[in-house]
Length: 187
Image (cartoon, rainbow, N blue to C red; front, top):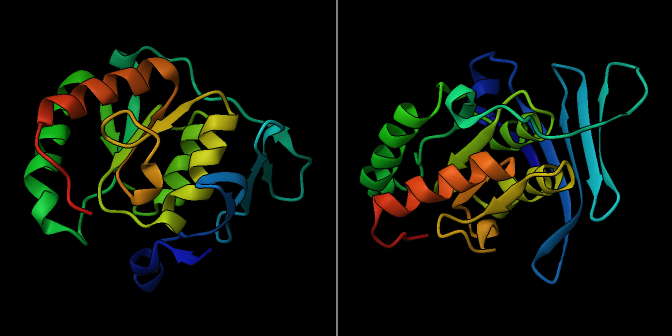
């Protein structure tokens, strides 16, 4: 559980703040929920049962990742501020993503970035150096909305904090870009 994802945003009065809760069994999230209290949005999913979004007091709506082509994709990211040693590799990824996708965004709350990727607001997400509670619920949402979520090698270890997520076609581009950055990642 992350009691407040986007703590710096909260302190500075920027309303992109989320609460993220997930149940992880055998290293895989099986239930997850992300709530944006200042935006009145909630996203929830269960492995194999799909994911939904609630806006305001409305009824839940099933969610799906976007289908935009990579050259029209808007991809979210976050800086590895906790792990400055990863900055050189991250900057290579950032440059590659700016060249490959239409544009990038950096809202500052990974759980919400992943939830917004699950509903198609963003077409992908990448970051280094996160914590399991930053990515467990949001990663499940992306998967249940039809997307892919991996670590930077394309493997299943994204709960260790290095994550790539998006619809299959954008995710494949992210994996390729991450491979070009080379080097080993420290956690």
